[in-house]
Image 1 (cartoon, rainbow, N blue to C red):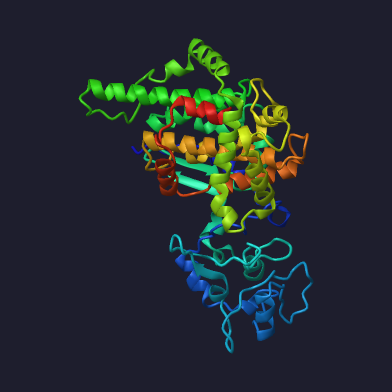
Image 2 (image 1 turned 30 degrees about the horizontal axis):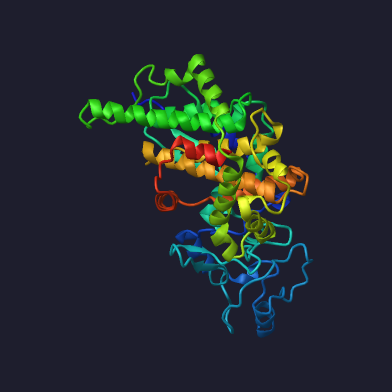
Length: 444
């Protein structure tokens, strides 16, 4: 008899509801929105004039767009329902949605939405609604990416995992509204009876990070130590067995070492005492921020936050990494503390969401899991640095909406395919698998 798959994350995903026009950071902007072949074929048959505010372009509209002005058709829709703009199309014939809204990404070669000069989907209305969906009233008329996001589904032999992307601010808000320990997020991802080895590795990481009695800095470092210790145990096991053994499922009790209270207490005590030079850590995080945001800055993306933040980071990377602000403020505002801090909860929610959805994939091995954890730690560094650089002088954070926006931006900036992530880690670091000391330097 076939054993039914378990479905971690299904209940959490069911709770998600898109806030549509009320979203504080619409997903219809500032990144690659891929278009599947079925949608492109349908769009070739749909004229732009089917959408409100998207009448056929004429030479006057072309000139306005070229000048960066906001053009509109001859309809009399209110400003709230008009589509923001469209790229000039061919003259003398009806322009299709495909011609108006799809192009080829030069980097990846995939077909994607042609964003406007303001970085938004050309079919986004003034009410931040999808003009295609409003006009056609059928979800099948929008790209699969738009239908699915922010939901993620992964298939394994024994289970189907569901998760939600932290690239959506509503997902982060959902996590922040959970009680202590984020039980609704983690309950189905922390089953000790699941036999998959990488599932159990991730469970160790999640259980540490979700424990809000542990300061976030200590939790991140303790999880890193556990991953490196598991790596050493795997390598030792292979040496003993002539390099032939590859653990695919844990033996009974294999992970009990990390769950034992004495081990956990001694580990947390050790990581709480380890701290790098504050100036070195501060400078390292600023340089990581500048490196990770360079391409987005060049492309003019997220400019409202990245522009001022990069200017500030450049000045702070001066002598000793301390010019521009009071040195004492750098350590108190920027560093994660050695005590539980409610201000760190948004950052904890972000890293937990990313570990649930990204740490294990259908094809990943243990080394890739470690590299992905490093990438998530870099995302935490980026979010923390952005929060510091964008904060008002003397303040720690802005409004809750500002916090959500910055966390969402950090997630989107770091939202690369696995292959690009691994390529970056291999090229950017002499040792792609970090030593524990480098984690300590980044966390500060």
